Image (cartoon, rainbow, N blue to C red; front, top):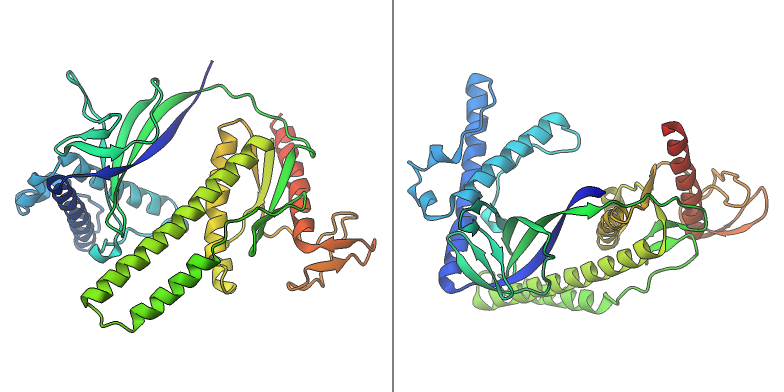
Length: 380
């Protein structure tokens, strides 16, 4: 019996020719220009007529003939993305921001092309040594992973990093096998409590063996100090900026690799995982030096959720205001006078010696499991 329909991505490094790179840069610029002009016209039309109207890309091709030089599909995708952004904002203004103008200096350039089926075959093909795309033709690429034969290629997003590297994220859709829901128990459920120093502490008292990021961070600080003493805009300044971008990219890749491997290990070993719905952005602003770890835990939590879901397992989210750290795991007593800096504390009621982080992880496991069982009972 077929299961749900999933999307998966294969990200490949592109090595375009100078002509292909020039066409990519033109497409990036046209997409950014079109987004900004459509957004400006939407605001102007709303201020004049009090109506919401989003013009199509064809409306701008007369006044901007350079839009005809690039593929029309990325321009249509810009229109769809802006329309979706407005719909999300009007549906839930608290969770989604009003669409913003895009800046050329942001360094975040990308465009998306959907795969079309013609008589001659699909418009996009992922080959063993490259990618075939409309207008761009065959682009050499490092393809480290081959798609399975039943995967259906849907779209490709081409992006350029701040260091000038080109990547393509090839999205495939496939029909997953029917996964039987795994019934978690206390022995097969893991609680994960966010930790500033080690990403997380689990209910078994273990901490992950994280790669050492102190050396790259120290090197980054030295390079930034050296940059501050250079003349802005000079050749040495630009070369130093490129070195800093490359180091930033190295640190991000190192963190991403660790998070994917660690989330895969946990998803394979446990039937359910309980995490807190923590405000990581607020935590990063309050605690000095917590920004990297907060963003890392957010990525780790998202990776863990979809990996568990695809195996029929549960990722249970506990409310952020639940007093997991103040509640004694042995007797259930809530210590209201517990300070934030107390890492080890003794329960006034039963006298148990508790580690703050391990105790919170165990309470997350038990409260999350109780929450999961209560939902199942009410649904039945």
